[in-house]
Image 1 (cartoon, helix red, strand yellow):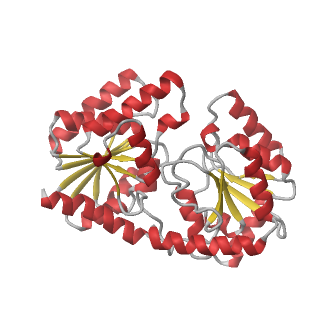
Image 2 (cartoon, helix red, strand yellow):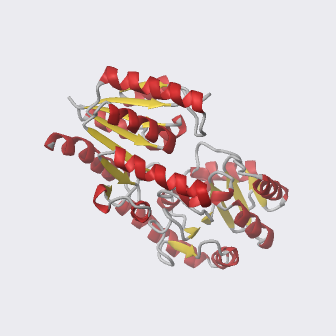
Length: 379
């Protein structure tokens, strides 16, 4: 029996990318373990039972905390020595570094680094150089690296990772999208959502789903909502300001009369049901999950051309892709699409066909199962 130990920093990541995904491996006969950080309000016991996996929780944060990180490393070493995995699979930066170091020291036969994105793209100077070094180190510690998109693979190669050591599983994506989950919601649900959040019918609606921070383009959101007063902007995500400029931008968004701030929401289906487009002025992604979810619901996307967006938006076929950092072009694209319902419907239908062809969850999970288990059986 193959024993696999997955590791992620946050249980939010486990829910987003591993819930159901690791159950497929357990159902195929693997003994599955997950190690991740703790978070209030996320019942890890439920996750464990639902996925037929053993979950190991430990204190760990995304930021560098020397004492906590040393303790986490020692804790990971105890887990690896106890369960003796055949494969470790690490995703998210902090957990990947600690778990891959441990697995390398304990000579775990297969060490998989799942690269969900390139943190160095949001950095400059010495911080960027250090992060690039960390990325190269994690790829060296791993026996193989799986990038979640072709553009992430290209980004790793650009910082010095050997091309032969990085692969993309299928068309990319860590878990795909459930095509049935994003079938149209009942009319009374979308009506209630509109009434609850004061989203007027008859006005074009642009949705943003994600963290409110510089990397996600919060400044471009402010510019678009300020200039396009006839468009309702519905913003779903928790504020994560990276500095004072972000704090000012978030406050400006909250003050605009055509902006609806929803905070983090667990179910985005009613939001997509009332939205004419998804907008994503991001500076970097891994593979933009929100885009493939919106596409599954038939909603086209306007996005900045970035790592992780260019893999899923084909310009004027499944959405609109604008020049990275060009706020004027981004605002103009929203204005153009908001006034052209026929084009929106054409792009939305094309996006839906494309995402179900390339990122349907059953297909994606089959490919990942083959990657872990058949590759291991052959070694």
